[in-house]
Image (cartoon, rainbow, N blue to C red):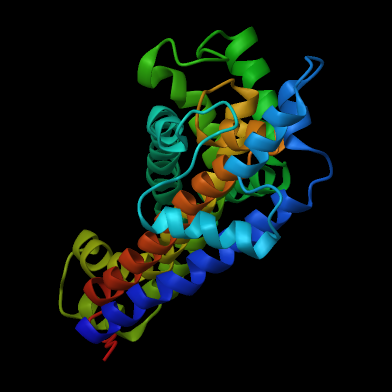
Length: 307
């Protein structure tokens, strides 16, 4: 296991370099002059423009800019915005909003999706099974953008159950956007767990456990459900990382001041340091979660040996 962990940690390096370089190149390719965009209609002398270009290495080739940025990043410096604000300050200020949104969505999709999948498998071809299959098909078919707007109108404006924008009501403000962000993954978890649990309930080891006289709850909870969780855990680990990219849309619709909204704003302003800094943080989180998921394999299925 130790060798496996070391190999996975070493994989961090090419993954981070590849992801950050792609983002950096895309920001570099955006047409327009960020210094002129910064000044807007206000006059800016040539000397000031030259100073800003030199400070942010804007006249250097792409590879030189990227190399200087990564060198500073390794030393813990995420760079500065064109207005002189450290990017690390922006990340520190906005990360809690995105973290609360992602955590709320993760809990909703894991709990509701898991319960729905278990009930559908245990009540196969019954009313609950049909309800879960129909509702999950609808959730998967509707794009998150459209579903978020529908939820905002129905549950926010007409029913008044949840706030439709901002973070003024604490954790309660994240319930509706979190549910909308989790909708597709929640449906997929329910269907995935239903299929996996049905397969395990038909397996020989389950029939053997039942023949030994074990109770139904013990057979399902102790044996079948544990093995059925392996693909679900894999999905949850990968999905939490992917969920961070979905926050860009949800934070925009619900006006949440998180990292996703900041990425959207920074792309428009051509602030490459902000975009690359936040994306690098997302990549590190995604790779770390993937490593945690792989380690959980060994706990859920002792037959797995990495060495």
